[in-house]
Image (cartoon, rainbow, N blue to C red):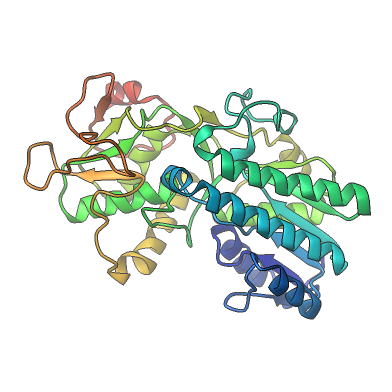
Length: 377
């Protein structure tokens, strides 16, 4: 893929798409087509067909499709599934019709079975039930992978699929409806700091473990495998250490400068208990992430301050992935859980229902569960 090749990033306004466009431009690629705001509506078969006929891309990064956190997956599973199915079907078919030299389809680690062995290996895909909270979205991403495989087998095209770990970074979705864990925590922590709130409630127990990848590193991995991987098997894009949600929440609070207490509401869903990828194949090819977690968080928060917080789009009140509230009993304390949680979800709970973690200082690279975190601090 030389610097004059016609390249199309399908989903240029997504987290991964925006990072890819920045990386491609920085690398000297001068023939990028379909950049926002000129990208077609990928849910429209006619618009996608017309775009491919006119732009004639040679290489396609398919990173489009609606996504979101637990709240969006619970409230709009049909919308998420339908959008991702349409996007994959339209783009993959037109890539074949118009002779694209190579296509990379970015799936999702949500496609792994809920109880698959850790770290997650591609051999475990479609061997067990999915995490229920994101099953519709995950099934659509799996269908996109299978569609690439089908076109590859029937037509001999070079369409490859990658399963990335949990991405975050600039251009992320910080809305209460769509935010994943890090942008949701970041916005809530920021608002809690501004309001001098004394307590921040985080959904779930804090014990699930996640692997994260900075968007810039994910874009670099996508570009790397576009150049160096042609295999029929999907490939995992990860390589960072796993962290508990409690550790992530504390790290975000440190970067934001929130000095209150975090309380984990165990009555809210956790999602998959553990989700780290086996990225040995990627490492064998010679790629590793280059951005440490704290630097990535700091750069993400700086982008948030400039592009989201400065817009003055108003407080989130008690909505979102992470619930912001005052101490129970104080004026203005929330009376119900965030993300459509049950009434009284933020009331004082038993030790089995919630746990409070004080936050007094830096907390990076620690992997303990919330009980160990509390003891350590």
